[in-house]
Length: 473
Ligand code: URP
Ligand code: ZN
Ligand code: ZN
Ligand code: ZN
Image (tube, rainbow, N blue to C red):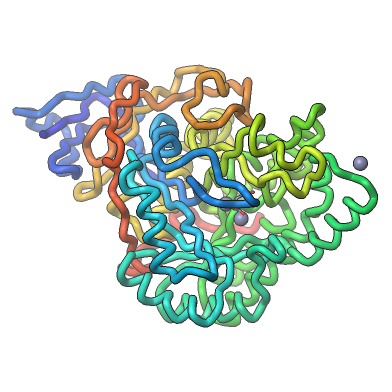
């Protein structure tokens, strides 16, 4: 079935123009003026921005973590993502030492394939990057198109890798065309500080932040950067929260290192004082790295503006407050780490970023969609509006005002960390490969209609990754 989108304003990472878009067989087949609409369903986008669908490079759906499992699965999580304007995610497939990578990936397909309503790829999330894992990695890259993996410098005894392991991973990734994502916090220091705080009787949520200082993030970020450089490899720093880390990334990029950085809506909008909320409510804001002092928000916005950070991941990792978060009632270190942001990532970047003059409209598209598609081997199939690209399209009303609330959101979690926040701009209709998933703010998609994304190797096809010039401010 053909569709034509007309009367809207198309916005990509580089352009803004008025034109029609003709869609056929899941793809954009023509962009131009007064296209022939014979036999096509006409979609009137008057007053709307026509954006490429969001690409969320960082989600944890249906994932065992911190002795429990996240509350959004591939059905609820991708429906919420679609409502929010995201049409592709790359989710973390957890690998454990008792399984081969192949088995881990099989498990993730079983979780996702019959449930996802938008397109999805997987990163590997490696909890022990031993020789067997590194040996198997090239096969998984080729057979599954999983061209990125996450290594942890935190979560001691659970996930933490030592420097040799990280270095070997960088070497293997360079040889096999994968992008290494690193969770940068010094897990040894954190382990010491957590043990000390608990011994002194400090059990409240705020101690989650106080035992994970920004210097622990800055140190680990710098270490990962230098290890990547020594291996002449490529590094993507996940969930950057603070000046200590953002500055290290900016310095490395100024030197020409192959380093990219992601931040998350939570670090742009919330701060450490949220962890001090009474009646254990601070637990709603426990994730890692933790929220920081408020002034760091400006550092992160400026880094996005200057192109020193490139992407916005939701780090969707939801746990109900009146459920799994209560595991840490008497011990902050047992609060499951994570929060719900998959649905609001796109809108809040527009509202707080574009509307408040912190980033341009083109930068919004770049950050919310294009850069992630490029870094993770999906561009130009995903991440832009162009002839030949998948027809993943968001019709966005830039003037619509609403208030974020758990009462109205679609994530399977009993609170919103952004409760009461006013946003301007809302996705009205969302198409994935030319089919409506959200139509006039109603879900009309089908369970399991999302397609698995086999991704290209890192920087294959010579995609120009940075579309925004990097400057040291
Ligand atoms: O607290 C967080 N971020 N939970 C998800 C796992 C991770 O480290 O990304
Ligand atoms: Zn992490
Ligand atoms: Zn105390
Ligand atoms: Zn994460």
